[in-house]
Amino acid sequence: MQYGYTLAELLISLAIIAMISGLAIPAVTKIGGFMSKKSDSAARDLYGVLRAARISAITNHSDTAVVYNVSALPDNYTGGLSFVANGYGIATRATKEQYAEIIANSQYDHLLPDEVFVLSQDPQARFRKMPKDTAIVGHLTAQEEQTLAALEMQAFGERRFLDQPPQSIDEFKVGLPDAQDPTHLYEGMESRGMRMVYLFQVSDATDELSPLNTMADLSLDTSAASLDNAFAAHVFRPTGELSVPGASLKAWKERVTIAVGPSPDAPKEDRFTVSPEESGGSVVMAAPVRIELYRSTGRVQIAS
Image (cartoon, rainbow, N blue to C red):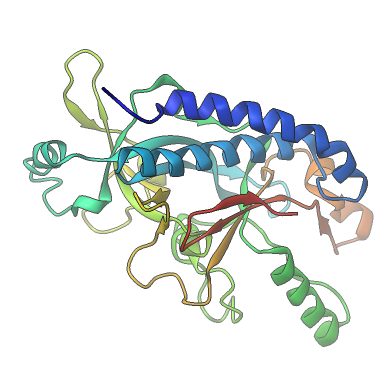
């Protein structure tokens, strides 16, 4: 007899809850809580998937990850590329048998057991794109953003900081050099509670394991012997807590934030409440929808 819930059951149940919760959105919109229906819908979808992954980890006693696809999108503000997560799926930690099969290949024999994940075969958990013109674009809490704004007004008489998406794959991974970010509020994907995992999939035809490759230039593995199947992920342990690599997440950073909003290539009227053309240079970004994750409990919530 099998106990617990399948991923499909969890995802469907949480989707219904999210739809019911969505009835309260118009009231929140009136006070500026959500600037975009698209961003809100994207955030609620991701929120449901994160919760489902945590419950699955607890129910099935196995590390479970929400694994993100990172894309380089043209940025209509900087004129360059911005690197954002705009798709995700659910994966589970490889079993002992799967891990042994994977590391039998010398290309993967350096991978550690807690780095190797297998994409769920449940259709509900397969990779999906976020709604058009939306992505995970930021990481600051509302309080951190307000603190930075106050410091800038005091020092410069104007607000200069924008919680912009990373401008390179290295910035996405590890953040900016000290000279460019003396505040250290963004230290790469670890600031978002993410870690790097290597993703494999089971062939529907042969049941054999194979790497699930990203585009080579967007793999997070930038080492000399780089692998193309490295993804950013939020990993939940069987205890429910959020798994971070070693001591990478600062001791005081119990709560991490991911911000869902207009993607870098979304229309400017969606990205900005005050655009560069309107202001002559000083811009105001549209407020994102923030999802909060708590490290020690794995609790997931949409910030109020």
